[in-house]
Image 1 (spheres, helix red, strand yellow):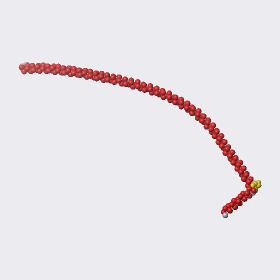
Image 2: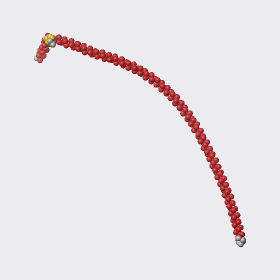
Image 3: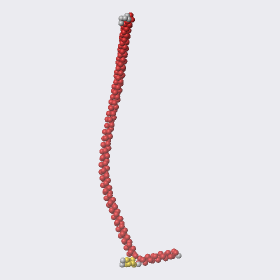
Image 4: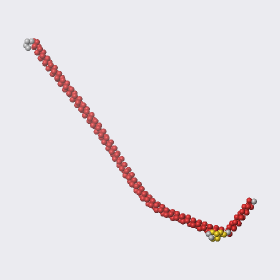
Length: 200
């Protein structure tokens, strides 16, 4: 029964739609049917769609023009970057050549310094040997001079000692002689005095 009601309602709807097609309305004082309104809406939708599509197309064309402009700017930038890169590469090559020259000069300077250092080292060794010889000769001369001075001193000390001893011996002999003479004289005087006590 519900199926019959549904079928009936569908038929009623179809009849209403059929009636709606032929029914006239008044919009802004103009008589129109549902079909004319639908056609008008369709035409307006098409016009609006075309306008919207045109607007989108205009935006895409604008974007394409901007993109082309940007591409030209990028190409100009790339050209200027290429020029800068070429200048930088040239300067780098010049710097590398300059560094190579400096490296070669430094190598030559280092070799020259090493040769000079070797020569100086040889000279120092030679001078060191000469100084050693001079010091050794000076030590030998000093030793000889010291030995000679010591010998002279010893000889002079011995001579002085001998001379002093000889003088002491002479002095002792002289003192003994004088004492003996004095003693003899005193003895004689005493003897004389004893022998002749009245003579004094």
